[in-house]
Length: 462
Image (cartoon, rainbow, N blue to C red; front, side):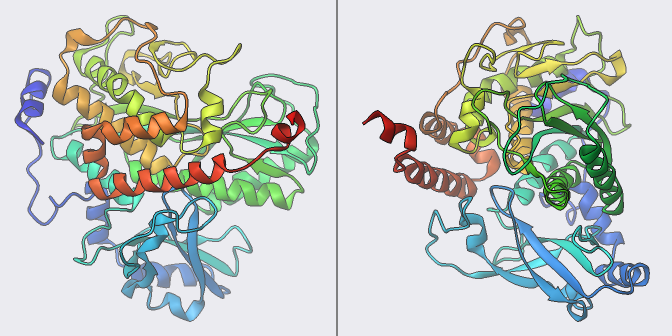
């Protein structure tokens, strides 16, 4: 953290930055490090098996750069030695969305992967007999793997925590429920309360299984399009855990939908004529006393909030490569008659990337609306937070543009977005040089594969 950041914070705070013991000041998320010191995996396993004595298997898994679960199923006997970890190849973080190695490494070494404390839960498929636990990968020096999105978010959060700032987030995840053949049912619009019997039963089971997995699902809301819904999770300062739950909830929703003869589609733009689906994050910042440092009247945002907004806008063109991770996500963002390009901020407007929602002064926050539903939540959160840091470190408060000034111009195609990202030193440094290079290589490889496809529509033009 450079000196400018400290200087820019002092006018707005009357407390010093946190001075962490050396053992804790290592770039890991503070809350998780404290939990790890207090939590023993062997005790967690023993407690779980006492509650679920019929358990036969445990799924151990990592979340790759696209947010896809990569793992394997082990016998219940293996749970007793989980604290020792197991091994997965580093190339897990070089895989494209089809599971192929898109950006070959110089070598493909195995790396030790250890359980994340508190993540042992019943598996949605037969929860009485199957468990699941999230792993985190270690590098060769036993430090967090620099290619792992979860570890990247921890590192970004640590920069806030070391100075007494604690981000609070709440995600909203949009998706479509469809049958084997999509049906154009009558559109009942946003917030419609009545659902079909099939959907009501599905949502009841989804809520039950979410509770079983300790996922704080607070609401299921009907969106504008037929069959489109939004999942809401409780706001929390445990940012990494929130992102864990986003991915767990996406997987759980797909499973429950399939069980009910439907499909849960989290593509950013699954249907050309209908609205896309986003992954929206509500962000605020607490101080060490748990008070919201954004607290201010909506028509007189304080300097901290204005700096964070300005930083997010400044890095937005480079951020698009992370927030729109594939060609389909750009279909959602590209301007058409009903969907303006998100490139501005505003009060209580959904036509802007950065929305200041209605709230009382103490709950003032920013809603970041740019990311698609298919984006990796760890990387989305890390990118948004990096924008906030950029504003606090590098921008004068007077530089914030007026609301809805349509700035800055955003890349509308993936190639341009990737190139913009690669040129943004601040963002690539924040996410890590090794990860950023790997991300660029993977996404260029995926784009090259996509552009080689001759579509049926093209063939019909011949």
